[in-house]
Amino acid sequence: MMTTMAEKRKQNIIEAVKNYGKRLFYFIRGRVNTDEDAEDILQDVWYRFTNVMNSEPIEETGAWLYRVARNRIIDKYRRPQPGSLEEIFTGDEETEFNFREILLAETPETEHLRNLFWEQLFSALDELPVEQKEVFVWNELEDIPFAEIAERTGEKINTLISRKRYAVLHLRKRLEKLYKEIIEQ
Image (tube, rainbow, N blue to C red; front, side):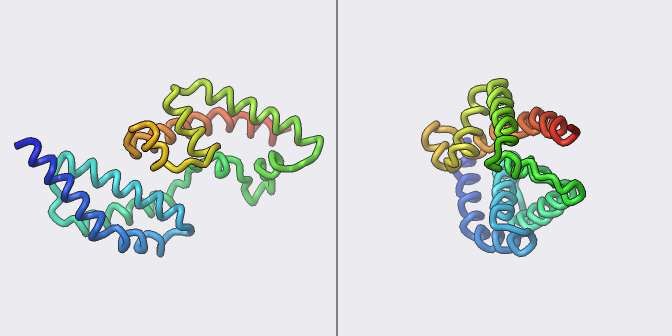
């Protein structure tokens, strides 16, 4: 009986993705700035959906999916948080300071900063559990998609996303100190 319930939940998830996937993406895309933002939010909606489906039934699947998507869009604009190194180091308009530009500049003055940044990054990466470090390096530095990493490792994509998230949170905290030291000089 447990197998049939699990199979039924799995089938419900597959049907929901088939029935709502494209429409839900376009709904989200119409309310955010980029395709990447829409994909991130959609991925989070599907993640939440699978978690809820594994614990309780949803009566109105479409309404539930759109409500969660709308809430995730609101959350994104309410408290924006960077999700990648590139987003961590873009300057704000008030200070007109862009750390990323400094790292990419080809001047002798910035060579030291670049070396310091990479040293700090790899030092912070070494503090992470191996699984988090590998996912971050593969996805962020080697630009390998989560689907390919999942294929390589046999892990679920949601597990990999979670590991990268923990890595980004740790790196953000560690590299923010470096950022503040540099801009306060």
